[in-house]
Each structure stands twice: as structure tokens, then as C-alpha cells.
Length: 219
Image (cartoon, rainbow, N blue to C red; front, top):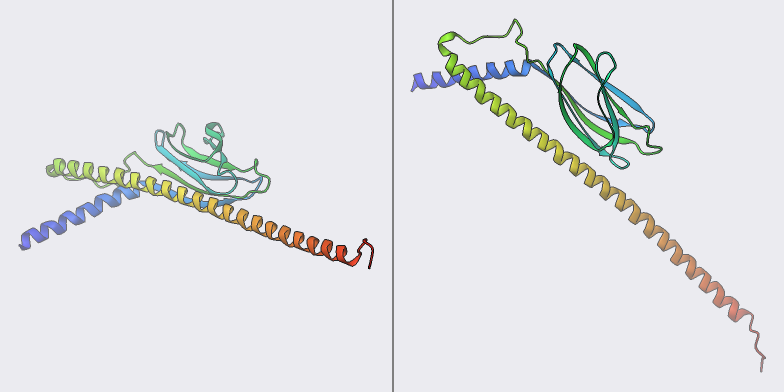
């Protein structure tokens, strides 16, 4: 029993070490930004080597028609991706140059509406660094199968994360629509009540004047 328990602890520690290596090789930034009308905001992510995968996700959570203009520029300020009046996007591309990539959002098309944008910039370092730990040769097959299992788990977690962001975006948009509808109902009811009161006052005024100034003959 003790031997099996020690073996389980070693396997758990080894899994944690491998997971930490995968985490250390990936840098990600998740932000939520509120854009004002006529504003252009830019964010940055650095690629350390040619061929690194860069993932870019964004979704407009609230404001206006839930759309935004976006643009991605390479280190030489050349366009990589761009779009106009997009509600959300999920893109992955390989870095063609080493350096800082620029991710810009533009709300210049809006005159009054501010917009809440949720976005994620991830840069994956696929090249092995000199400090990476390497498994011993006798356990190559075991380590390979473990790496494959961890990779599948990572892909599944990534898919779950994307689904959660999708549902969060849809929930925020529905909530914003409900708030907008609630505001319209409130103002419509207020205007309708004012018109009813105005009509009542006019009716009272007409009736009082009608009986105050009779035009028929008196007996």
C-alpha cells in the first residue's frame, strides 16, 4: 500500500511539473475595456520568434449595436488583420516577424454610445528554451503519452473557456437589451401618463367653460 501511495504522489508531482512547463511557455492577457465615443485604443503583444502562434479574441459586451472596428499591425506597422463593425472575432495566426504586434479597437463610428469590449491576446512560445526540463531516456514513452494527455486536456480546457466567453457575451448582450427595453417602457409609460393627465385637464377646462358661459335664453 505504501509503495502504491508513493507512486501516486510521484505521478502527481510529475504531472504538476509538466503542467507548470506548459504554463510557463504561454503568456496571455485578458482585459475588459470601456471605449468612449470617437476613441481609438491600442494594445500590444510581443512575439519572441518567427512562427509563434498569436491568438486574438474579442467580443463587444454592451453599447450601441454591439459592433467595433479592429486592426492588427505587425512590428513594421503593416496590417495583418482588420475588420469593420464586427461584433466578435476569434483568430489565430503565425507571427511572420519578431517584435511587438499592435491590436487596435476603434469606436470612431459612434457619436454617443460607449462600448464595453472584452478581449484576449495570447502569445504561445512554441520553441524549446534552454532551461526546459527534459525527461530521462528510459521514460520517453511514458512521458510522451503523458504529454499527449496533457495536451488533450489543455485543448479541452481551451474549448471550455471559449464556450464560457461566448455564453458570457450572449448574457451581457441580452442583459443590455433588457435594460434598453426597460428604459423605453419607462419613458413610454411616463409620456403616456403625461398625455392622459393633459387630456383630463383639457376636458375639465372645456366642461367648466361650457357651463360658465351659457349661450341659451334664461327663463
